[in-house]
Image (cartoon, rainbow over all chains, first blue to last red; front, side, top):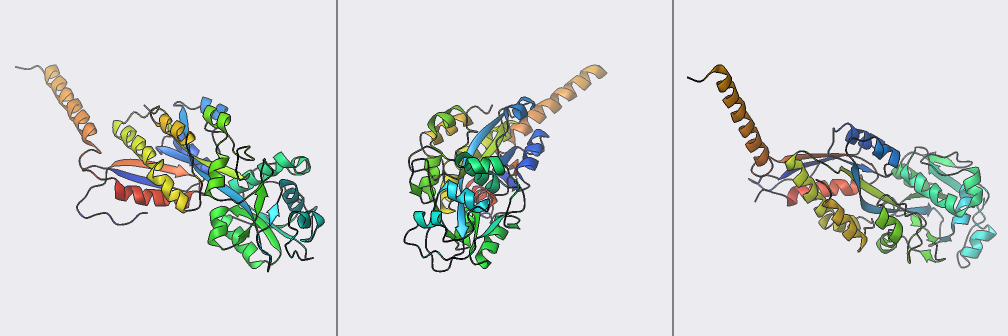
Length: 297
Length: 61
């Protein structure tokens, strides 16, 4: 991985990252076969308590899960959590359902049946999506609940963000949910979702960054959930990815270089993430996170 | 004449000093420090860009 290096120059660090899944990454960190893990789910207090060296969580990226749909001649649609819950649970079955028309009075919604597409595999996209729906809809919470994998009552299944995006793209009148960058890559239509303020927010880097402004929660614990964030201007279905680093690193070279890398990740690295349609932490939270780098000893 | 124990002690001391010197110089002169990470697949597009950009940015002066 990576491009060619300038001739005759020696890199300070041989940085490697293997995308083996959050759970496997955490196991590798526990067995000390890696220097850091990346996870879509933070460690629980119980998991941390069992680890010999206390790990520190560094939230690095804010991702958005967006409803994507394939509706010819229909532009951007507005959704609420209640309506999304009703669609994905099979209670709303046609695109011209009254609830959808009320949210989108100028859209030419067809009388066609809605084809739901969901994930076949366990995923953070599903977790964030169903976590949000469970917070908004009592019906969803009762009938289906939240999880990386849930008992979907209706729809077709696809494994992974790319496959789900592809299935929606080739299936007229379908609706699914993917990470924003996949929707953009596949040129899929994606909707705005009403946030806790009652506004329909476009899922862009501003709305994703705003979601992380859950002041008290984030300041107290960087593992906080940012789904259905009450912050102004927040897109409501957002999720964090954390780098998890041991608080004590015996090797002085690794200690120095991992701190250097983290400082880089919160400066140049964040700019790269922005260009790839991810949100980033903004001040003062980015400052709090930078302060935590000093705690690695 | 040094005793066998003295010789062994000096050899151990020398090895320890060399070990510390090598450890201190690793990553600061010519030997890159190895940092391995693993985990989530969703942010891989970004993290792979980070790895690529960081490799290009960080060199021994």
